[in-house]
Image (tube, rainbow, N blue to C red; front, side):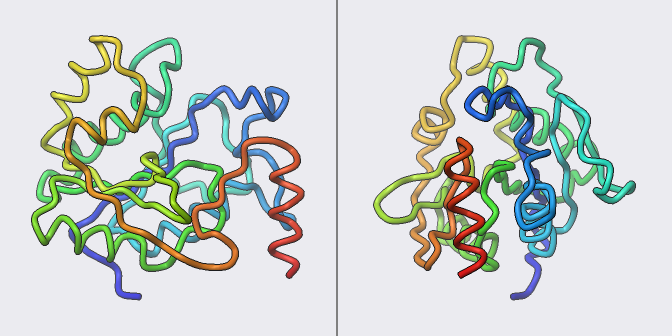
Length: 202
């Protein structure tokens, strides 16, 4: 799948990982690799440049050239804060690119046509686009307009915290992805990690 040159990427890895016993999800091992390594490997080839937003140290085996930033809003207010950090990075470093694709650190099966299909949705007039699978929306995995970062900051400072609420406010359209395993399968607990190992083995 061709790389969409008009899209930047960000892996949001700044959460507290409460359901993993406090171990950062990025450090969880899946098939001998850090979980975040699977996400970077799938998202990176689809975007012009990639940022990781993380508030804890990342696994040492990740590339030393990987660009990393911490949330600029204190207190870890959630993935929307990571998205704001990523949108600011996009505006600062690639002002010619209007779109940023976000993905969480716990989605190791991201589809190879994620950026292309979401980009097609916004090219057709959608103000933003989010991925969906098997009847469920995944707003952390979405394509966002960089130009709305000021509105996002105001939304956060007004108490907004849910990615779904921000997607609704923008009028983001869902784009459905199918596959086996579910290309948007996300790992929230140890049992999910065990299942992902079995899916990879299968």
